[in-house]
Every structure is written in structure tokens, then in C-alpha cells.
Length: 338
Ligand SMILES: Nc1ncnc2c1ncn2[C@@H]1O[C@H](COP(=O)(O)OP(=O)(O)O)[C@@H](O)[C@H]1O
Ligand SMILES: C[C@@](O)(CCOP(=O)(O)O)CC(=O)O
Ligand SMILES: [Mg+2]
Image (tube, rainbow, N blue to C red; front, side, top):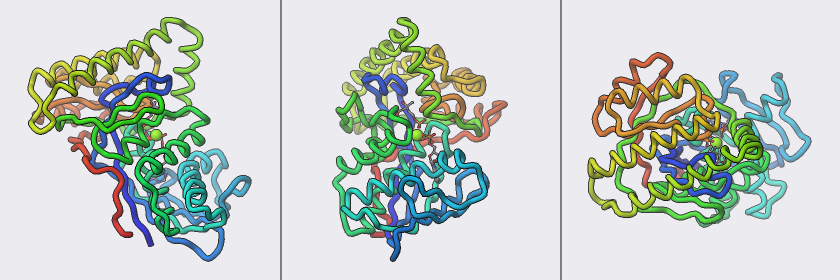
């Protein structure tokens, strides 16, 4: 039995625009998905995913194309739910050159699903790592991140960046621009997350931005403006001392860029009333800045505040179901049981 766990992430800035080649800076947070993989004697894949909606369900199926699990729920729901685990198993089979390998897989996660904290990437990264190790292979981090990206790309119908999967694999803060992915030094930023209890459909939201961008030049310009602000933010981070607590002036400047980024994301149609309400509650509480994180539509916002004020304010904000401080996860994917 092999067990691996990988972190979720928040976007300091750059989501959506990163899909079109602009840079983005996500940072891994200490909320993890844990995947257990046990090879089987046959070619079946049995998945236990207690945290999926429908109050969790257990299915067994042979995997691969055409073969669907025998459960009493509509196929699209099962496909949406199983897609990432399925794709992770396929990547592990390919990496270990074991096309008929079967597994018992169990997924546990404290990352809310579809909420912009990268639960899909964490599941895919931990899943590929656990399943390949269970077959006696070990991928280096770059290859693991690359395979995880390919898995997300496939499930999201060819619309994914390398940002989430690279960040979950490496941990810490990273910079992604197209195929160019690098860890970056960043000071420990005081992230506070607000969660509305809901979710957004990443594929649909990405498709919406793609259409807007194709239709209007000003939407394409908006995407480019996100890239410009990310470059500004990167320069600020590069000039900061990663070993000491961030200076108030740095937090103020990063916060201003986050506010701006939220405005541009809202212009691209991916915010929601609940996300805007949490963003404003954070700003009113004195946060340096606040924005939605991830695909949007519902889910989470991230704010910068070293005091407790934002977390407290969010916990009293109508529509905010959970508020918590998110510690930077300096370690990416890791082995819990080899
Ligand atoms: N605990 C889990 N068990 C199984 N699958 C999961 C789990 N967490 C996430 N997933 C998969 O990831 C999907 C959510 O990914 P996505 O829509 O990209 O949102 P996000 O990555 O922001 O959480 C879920 O529908 C499911 O397929
Ligand atoms: C919108 C996007 O930039 C980030 C999606 O993040 P999440 O799956 O909502 O956590 C898509 C991508 O980069 O693949
Ligand atoms: Mg995702």
C-alpha cells in the first residue's frame, strides 16, 4: 500500500490569463489530498472517494475508455467525479509501462472540491505519485508535474495551464508562463481564505473566458492586463527577502495588485455575488487586498492580512461558510507510506 499527499493552492494572481500564456503566481497551502494506491491482481480499478458529493460512494470498474462504473447515478455526474482519478491511473499505467495494472485507490482530502483551491490538481498529483510508486516506479518531480498537467488537460477538454499541478507538485510559490514553470522565493505571506460553501465548474468558466476573449478585443486586452499586473507582482516578490516577514509596504503593494486582479476577473465574468461579498468584507476589515482564487463562479477568495480581523469579519459575513488562515505549504507532494 502506497500513500502520497499533495497540497492545494491559492492564486496570488494570474488565474485564467495563465491559460492563454500570461504568467501566474500560485502558492501551495497546507490543505492536502491523500491518495492510497494498492495494486490488484486483476486490471480493475476500485475507487473510494468519501469526500465526493452524493455523500461519497465506492465504485469498482475496469477503467480505460468505454468501461463505466456500475453505480446508480447519472453518467455525467460519475464522469465529472471520476475523471481526475481515472486520468491519474492512466498516467501511472503509462509511466510504469503497465497498461493492465489494476488498483484499489482511496482518496481523502481536506481541500473543498471545485472551490478554487486546486483539489483536482492535488488529487491528480498525489494519485499519479502513489500509483506509480505502487508499481515500483519513481518519477522525478518535473515528470510527475508534467504527467499531472496532461491528466488535467485531458479532463478539462484541452483547457488547462500547468500552474495548479506544478504548484501542488513542488510546493511553495511558483511562477508559470506557458510551459515555463519555476519555483520562486517568496516571503511567508499571511493568506486568509473565505469559502462560500459552493463550487464553480472549472471547464465551463474557462470556456466562458475563452469565448469572451475571442469575441471582444477589450476582453483579450483584459487578459493581457492580468499578465502585466502579474509581472509587476513578481518583481515585488523578487525584491523581497524570503527569509524575513514581509514588510508592510510589500503587503500593501501586493494587496493592491490582488484587488486589481479581482476587478479584472470580475470583468471577465468569473466572479459571483458571494465572492464579491467576501472580497468586500475582507477589504472592509482592513485586509491589504482580496480576490477570488482559481476558476471562480463560487468557492473561495484569498486575502492578505497578518491580523485576525479578516478571518473574524469573514466568519460573520453572510454567504461565507468557512474562513481560515492558509499556511504556505513549503513542501509539495510527499510520500506518507512508501
Ligand atoms: N476528495 C476527492 N476525491 C475524489 N475526487 C476529487 C476529490 N477532490 C477533488 N476531486 C476531483 O476534482 C474535481 C474538482 O476540480 P475542479 O473543478 O478543477 O476544482 P478545484 O480544482 O478548484 O477544486 C472534482 O469534481 C473531482 O473530480
Ligand atoms: C482557471 C485556471 O487558471 C485555474 C483553475 O483553478 P481551480 O481548478 O479552480 O483551482 C485554469 C487553469 O489554469 O488550468
Ligand atoms: Mg482544478
